[in-house]
Image (tube, rainbow, N blue to C red; front, side, top):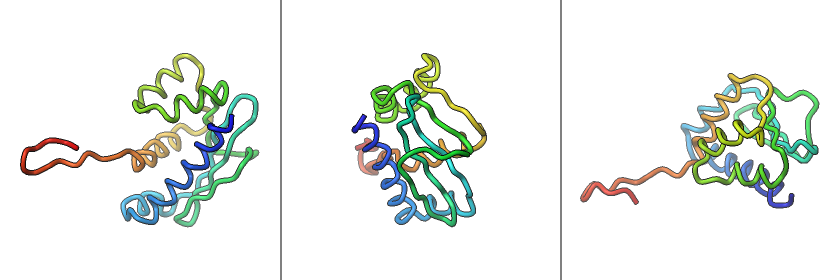
Length: 132
């Protein structure tokens, strides 16, 4: 459970860093007013507030999120959220019911765009056209 909690905290820190250093990411959240949470079925989790061009996160749960990602347990949450093939892992989690998404699916789609800013981009070497 500790790894899951730490992962959620680190997730918020990484988003804050992207917002500060990446103007495209900063523009992406500009004007957004969103509260969402990531939790386990047992009630462990963290909620995130995007407002005023910034993101804040808080331990625990909120009463009225616009959407919730609920994992069967902390181990499954950590496994899915930290997977290298994140999109496929989410789909597998949804199919197996290890992950249930509730709330506003338009906001979930927007959130997926936000998480894209955390994906490492490939750098193409102009000389030999290889990615590294």
